[in-house]
Length: 472
Image 1: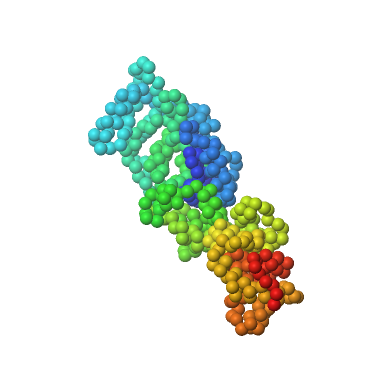
Image 2: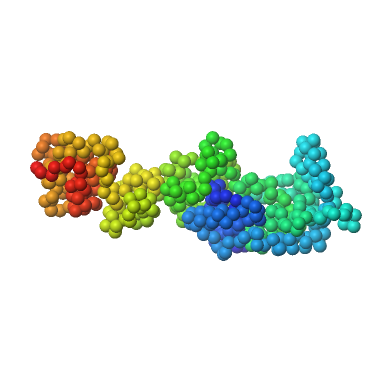
């Protein structure tokens, strides 16, 4: 049997972190088994579904590099097919017309409330003749669900789940206006799409029993279910905006790499020994539902930053430069030159040692693209360019002019010779030099910076320091 999974979000908001993990698990399971991963947009709630939310979901999945097979399915386009399935079931005797009035249903709710249980339809029209129908009532179509025994789901994560059929009423399939319900639409779509495995959050576990009854009533094979625990905040409470339940676009803006976020989400409720950093290739090879835990996972931004840092340090330099360019341009009001891009690619490796995300990396790399602007906003760096520091810098700048070979080694030796000749520590030269070249009091090794900037750019920046005197 070819494996087919699906991710079926409702477009009533952004693609949140829990939905992204569900999509990832479905994608990995399908790829692991050589199957297909499908996307279905469950947009039947026309009042709450928006084109903007659909776009956010599609963009989020693409950014995460979770491409789906086939064209995306839109549930709203299949309402006629859903309704036809309900009428077929009606004709076969597996469903019936219910003519309950609003007052009767309200009475059932009140009775359930008094008796302390949830509302369950009492089946009063289950075996009645439609000829007895009162005037002026447009009927709904209800499933004629089994009343005896139990419905058992062999859940691949939760284990066997048993639900007494007496606890499930005859659910509505088609409303009185002829529109299909969510339960009917999901079952028909899963069947028509050939879905073999439904992997979703365990908040849908109660739906699984009802949907299983409907699959069986229609004479269709039900899919294999796997209900994964939800993601909680660090405090163990249900994830909300205060915990970081943001849209995937927010994680992109915060500077996380898609591969790092996939790795983090993979380990959020699934494990493979002690492995923490898992490549996509390894994840496809290793992933299966038996590694999914039964307890809710807790989001941990410190762990996410750690994982992201690991990916930054192992990323291709050219790719990282492409990622940070949009974070560099605009602020300065100009494009990045090809020379600056070359400097960025040469220097970005050292910068990743301290960066937690792309925003950090862009801030650290800015000096490779743009010369410092005076007065310096970094007060510590500004203090280094005063008094003796400024004087030494001017003298060293003059000594740099004739250096023939612009390498890290020759530049460092020149600085050591200069410091020794003036009986000062190397730091007395290096720190003002760092401030002048980068606008900061912290950077990678200053001789690496000097080398990457190149002689012309470095001397130009030194010459632009206010009040510098480049005479020995």
